[in-house]
Structure formats: C-alpha cells, structure tokens
Length: 61
Image (cartoon, rainbow, N blue to C red):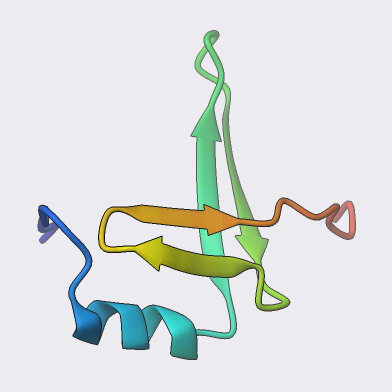
C-alpha cells in the first residue's frame, strides 16, 4: 500500500543512498507510459523536499 510523506526523513534518505538501482516512470500527454531503470549513483537527495537525478542515456534495450 502506498504512503505519502510531507518530507524525506533521515532514515528514508539513508535508504535511498544505499540503493544501487531505482526506476523512473513517465507518461506522455497521449498516455504512453515508459518505466526505465536508473543507476550509476545518479540519484541524490538535496534536502527534505527535493530529489534530483542525472538522466543519463541508457542501453537502448
């Protein structure tokens, strides 16, 4: 079951930092959905309300 948080806790930040891989999902205006695995330490928690990732080119698979 999903949960919604008002900010990223210290424990959640540690958990995010330990992950080797994460997924990004997007949906276009026409409803096309794309879910892509990401990694290479490209995810960073800037503060309790902001997360960024470096959108590097994937393998094309």
